[in-house]
Amino acid sequence: MVDRLNSTRGGTDTVPKDAPTAASLAKAWFGREILPLEAALMQYLEHNWRNASDITDLRQEIYARVFSAALENIPERPKQYLFVTAKNILINRMRREQVVPIEAAADLDALEIEAEEPGPDRIVIARDELRRLQAALVRLAPRCREAVTLGRIDGLTRPEIAARMGISEISVSQYLTQGIRELADILYGQPPNVRRKP
Amino acid sequence: MTDTATNHELQSPAIRIEQRAAEWLEQRAFGRWTQSDATDLDAWLQDSVDHQVAFYRLEFSWDRTARLSALRSDPPRESKMKPRDWMGHVKLIAAAAIAALCAGGVYEYAFAPQGTTYATDIGGRKVLTLPDGSQIELNTNTSVRLAADHTGRKVWLTKGEAFFQVHHDAAHPFVVMVGDHVITDLGTKFLVRRQPDGMTVSLIEGSARVETVGPDAKAQATDLKPGDVARATHASVSVSHAQVAKLETALGWRHGVLIFHETSLAAAAAEFNRYNRQQLIVSDPAIAKLTVDGTFPASRVETFARLARDVLGLRVKNEGDQIVIAR
Image (tube, rainbow over all chains, first blue to last red; front, side, top):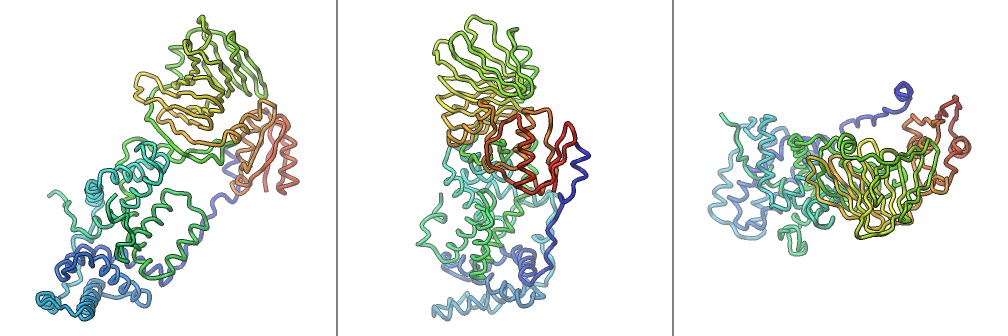
């Protein structure tokens, strides 16, 4: 029986790996080079833009601009590219809204991009990463955290999570959806608050 | 829920897009994900670069959290209930309970009083009628033991599968023991199948309760209603729900037939193999997924093999005690 199973053909067909396309290269670059800079970008935006409710839109616009550029040609200096783009977008917005806070303009003019060297955010040691993920989990809203824990750590399905938590599957979906969003904000948008112990 | 997940209309475009992206991701990770979902997501992504960056950002973050599974303390459990062959289309609705980690057989043996054992051979079927009129119908290759006490309303299913039609008697609940699981009826028709790692109970009528016992048991009881299918292992009890009419197809054996509805060839073969010494072998994964429909006499394994040859266009080779189905 076992021999038979082993001798059958056709069981291990694998999908041939796609040759990298402009889109897949841009995506990989975006994940590898840009997202780790999000905490710094958010800090920059929060510092230079008064209306906090615009920040998410600004970030989105900056990412879209940077990503579009990467689809054409991957920028060589991602950090510089990101922050110059951010600056340009802020200046455009200020012009459009005809509100130029003096201190913001000063900051924008002073924008200098640090040398492109891997910051602490980009050298991630596996152990730190796990610790950081745990810390992120702790910062989720309680129900959200429970749903994500059951789904991501325990590997339960949506109906199983619903039964565990005593709520509908729709509510489970909503908690998971919220969790997915909050985790991105914590993991990328906020400076890591978990450091390796010396 | 926070405001960010609701009141979409009031939110900035970026937040609306992010919410939609998160919904796609959640659906892909936890929902039913079909080819058409994948196509729809692709179309949505192609709509705009805004959609792409929002989705990729969440996707990269979510992928990072995969590492959290390293924190799992238990051995990986069956997260996706493996559909029992005849319940392939049952939709899960609920799940429950951490159950005892108890070597089921040992516990059962220690606590089982001597009684009368009834058994069937492969392909056999037998109906037992108890003093109170309750009936137990044994399927192929099955063995039950009845308690020797005065009520006679306690049964151990030690092997195989049985269908119970129980007269309700509040003073003397009818109890079925399966390994370390206990089914208590409250006036019921139900089907119980014992499996190497646990059992499956399908409730056709009435109500019943499933509990796990044993030295370490800390599980809460699970109450079943008609259409519920409870799959209990040493570690968990999960409940799915099906149309009662659909469950009836699982009872075809009571009339000597197997009923398949969009059943995979592999599952259908496994089902036949329970009833026959001559075993169907479907080892090619490519054909194992082909589906079959129809009602077949459980003993006519060759009829089924012929169907596989004539309708599905497969090669069928009779090798004595085995019938090999291949491309």
